[in-house]
Length: 204
Image (cartoon, rainbow, N blue to C red; front, side):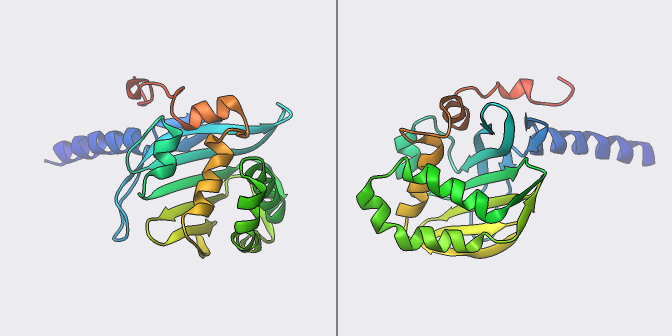
């Protein structure tokens, strides 16, 4: 009986591990699924990529989770569903404001001057959430909550909610817009370079 129980636990644990951390980018394990909560349904990994500066400095691993994975930027923009952008820090130590400023610069590259002016307060609110230092392995989440806005979470601490949907759309443009942080990065986030699932499962 104990032997059967041990075998069952081993099998179920293996299945869980392959399901939860079956995708890896630059030695960072990413869950294929973000579990559902009372507030939102399960989210599925759409794609992930490594952001590098000057092709030398690894800055972060970005991952996009959606209710329904898609390779179409417009569908992702327009879908009024839950979404999550994950920023996994790769630098040994970096000022949190430096990260926020880099996000702002990339954002400005993908919106018009008029949109930038309209989003001024939202951008300033986002910048105010980033203070202190961040270290390798720490993460920040930008969660879109339909009908409410963007919830910013840094190191598992909820910083606040930026109302409306325009700010999140602008944030998405950093990765999948006309001027993304990198063309291959965009394709990765859209899942165009994502291996088939069978190649992601450990031991296969």
